[in-house]
Picture 1 (cartoon, rainbow, N blue to C red):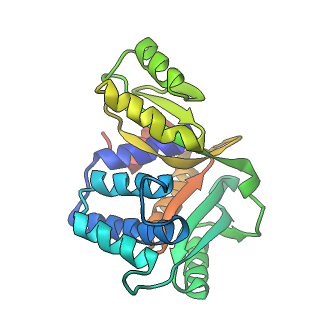
Picture 2: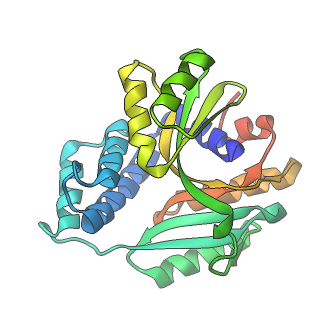
Length: 251
């Protein structure tokens, strides 16, 4: 998990180009529509909506876009009906992959993702083939230069975090789904900024991948993430830092 999380965090630090920003907005709008449809348009009573609204704010999405997406979800405005579909797959080296998508045409999305995977060394898998490896958790990454380890650990554990691990340059904090916002609030109160904070799928085991095979895995995951209907991609790879940094555009 740390490998995949670290790669995503490093990618985020590069900044968002205009084209990428537009794609990010599209994905967030879909999430807002679906979450408002399923849980209502009031963020006070819909924690999932509150989390997506925060994500929109962090992406600098105009508030009018957010409001319109929520109204489409609640039925106050007409809009496209999206279906949530979770695809399961294997990548190069036997890496387990979950693809979280929102689509208005499941048949089209399935065909496009299957074609994309076949071109990049991946294969669709049956329902339940890899999902059992993953558990949904809250995830927060904080750079080590922001705070001392003991101080951060006391703050997050007191706020309800389940675990904290340290990587080379960052701390990784894991929470139960319902406690993510509470831990984020505790960090805000102490003036501690995070690099990444989200609900994610944490694998119970990882697969080490190196060399060209590692680059193939990252290319596949990035291609899946770039698909318009894909919201998130989760994978259980463990890849050396130098390859992760190179793929993420790092130094």
